[in-house]
Image (cartoon, rainbow, N blue to C red; front, side, top):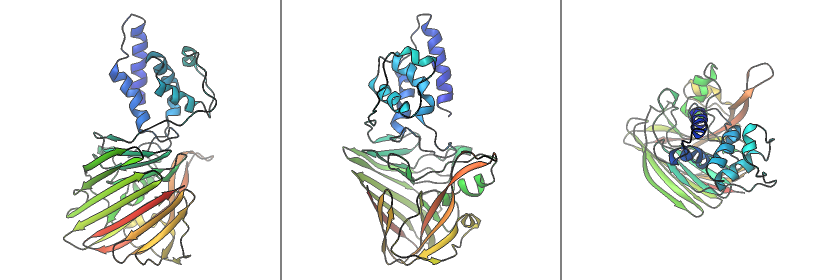
Amino acid sequence: GYHFYPLRAMVLTAEAARCRGIDLYDKKLYTMFATPVRGAYANLVFVAHNDGWYGASLKGNAKLYEIAYKRFGDDPLFASVLDLCYASSPRRGAETLLNPREVGPDPQPLEQRSCLFSEVGYAVLRSEKYTMIMKYGPHGGSHGHPDKLSVTLHDGTREVLPDMATPAYGVPDFKAWYKRTLSHNTVTVDSRDQSPATGRLVAFEETPSGGRVEAVCTEAYPGVEMRRRVELDGREVKDLFTCTSDSVHRYDYVLLLTDYPELASAGKDAVLEGSEVYRNIRDVKSFPCRGRFTLKLPSGEAEITIDGPAEVFIGTAKGAAFGKADNNTVARSVSHPLVVRTSGKNMKIETIWKLK
């Protein structure tokens, strides 16, 4: 929202200047259009980091891309964006009169590559329609969430592992759940939220079938080094998360699942102890764990390997907010937090996803 709001003003200014023979459509303005495309999922929806609004999409800015397509010489990237924007919505507005080109009836997916947004601090790994994102950068000030080294996974249609962003600032759950470490795909230590922190990129590599990223953070929890390495190769994701410390801690590794997973056993009713934020997870089940277990989901399977003894919990919690319900309250989906709990000086958990 804070990108496209000023971009619209810049485009209106550039259009007015163009009428006086002044061309403001330079490389910088082109980049303001192209960069959001590089960061979008295959269905043009943006990842909802920090206090972003869940479900924000390039489709809401199709009129601006009509102008960009015209002014930047029928750019094929913007042509692809328009094709996808209008695949599910009518093409309307005065801006469409700029382009006699017809929108393709069968749009092709964007041919996106893995990329690194080094200044804001997140890496995007892509393979076919699949996208894996890891966030490691600056906290984000008052809009930041305590979720260093968190990830999201998108299967081309929706998130398998979501970042739920914020429902609205005045909603009690905003600070009680959505702005807490436990509601993100990362690690919570000793049931406490991470401190505002900035991680450090260790490695990033783009490959024809995806790529890899590794980052470390030592500021989120005093005395604890958090390190995560994610590799995407075709339809396989390898996600290795380690924590090291000189002291004993309780580590909660969280995967916030969109779908309730199928496990080998039915599980037993349990109580997930911790700070007050853990009360947001209801209908908790515990599962036996012998070092390795498998989750089956509509999007594929995830095999989780734990170094040492652990407890595994799965429950149900509030999901992403996506608008207003009929009674003018915030409409939400549900999420299914899976928590792998270990204790000791160190933690090592590897998750391997086999996507369909």
